[in-house]
Amino acid sequence: MERQELKSSAFFFEAISKFRTPLMGLATLNVMLLHIFQNFELLGSDIIFYMFESGADMFMLLSGFGLFYSVDKGFSLPAYIKNRFMRIYPEYFLSCALYAVMFGTGVLWFIKYITTAGYWMSDTTLFWFYAMIVVLYIFYPVIHKIIKRSDTGTVMLIISIIAVEIILSCFVDEFYWEKAIALERIPMFIAGALIAKRVKYGGISIKSEKVLYFVIGAMASILLTIPAGRHYRFVLLPWSVCITVITAFIFTKCKSNNLVVKVFNGLGKLSLQIYLLHGMLTEFLITRTFVGRFNTAWGIVVTTVFALASSILLKMICDKIRHLQ
Image (tube, rainbow, N blue to C red; front, top):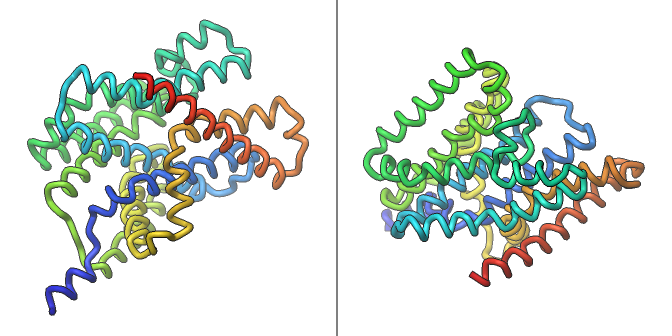
């Protein structure tokens, strides 16, 4: 009887895998809120900005988490390259083409960005996530071997990357800070893959009441972003891990037909498309159309609905392209 009570009161970290899509939905919501607050100039606090920006960190965490499971099923280099390419490039190709048409950037711009060279060669943050994720996909087979071999080795790898990046910020200041939005997310991606290994092979669980520690950890982490200064994204790593665990725990307490979980699940299924389109379309509608003359509330509603509808359409088109393969 005592063992059964302990089991029923435990939180199993497998919930992160079970609710990965709704968790991606939470990350997507954060990114959407960041775009809204930036484009409508509503941000008034660094803490609020960091909380919303952490959506990108959750994306990285959950991307690393999901990729570990995918590669751990069995690795074939040709299949890996094809699967990774088809996973992101149909949406990325069409989004780059759409951006080039809407903002009149020209063919050369399109070619540079479709290869991701555009991000690395310029001082813009446009499409930084895809430029970084392509690099991580290239190196992930090696990272996966390190993760499989040793938890300690993986932690040392994360610490080493953070140390190298801090040193780089001192010696190649201008280039580093132009790319920090991408480079400082590398540890998050690797941490996500390490957590996936521990979940898959360790069967991690804690007593439900100990989830409170993650609440305390989240609060401490977000407060530490202020003294962390320009390197605040490193502190968003523990924040994002804590928020992911807390949300997964809350989802386990919801009924299977819970409306909130369904909404987050729907956003999660569109996370790739929304991440690409929402900020771009919001900027275009505000700066290039009459939507910019709406009051803030109506502007937010119109841009959000338009972006969600466009994301659904983009997913339908790209799913058909993938189906042809």
